[in-house]
Image 1 (cartoon, rainbow, N blue to C red):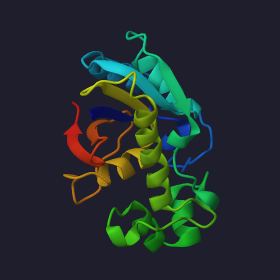
Image 2: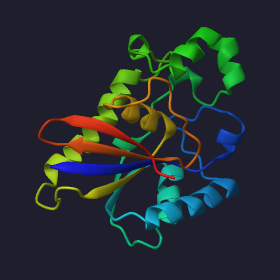
Image 3: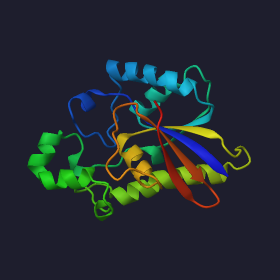
Length: 205
């Protein structure tokens, strides 16, 4: 069975605008973020989504509600789709993090190189563990709902920038450099349950 996942990042929050690292902190969308979700709505309306899987954090849930309001989709909400936990870096700006932990740590944090996959901020979640959490949830959802899914079904996923990066770069055909993750960016990934293969298709424009 091949499932098409359409994965998007939430809209802007005030912390995004201030370049603060959010992690598990539950921040609301701001007015600009709501406008971004409205723009995403046009893209999602062109798809044939069967269901929407969503992080339980407010910014992801509100984005999903706005972006799918024409579709009457069922939602499944899970904390497994949350952003990575950032430990002692959470709520700090990038500049504050650089001063506290050093620029080298920021570079490792943003890196998608295999040698940097086991990096974490002090007190935070390891990047490879975060990938397993999110990817594992999507696999489990498909596995547990085989009686309701068909080959080629499209599933939307409302989540966070770090989740999007780790899902994409765990795929075959992923770019060698870090993908852009502006608010409400939308990417298509294909997952084959039988083979366990994840394939990056590209950005949906």
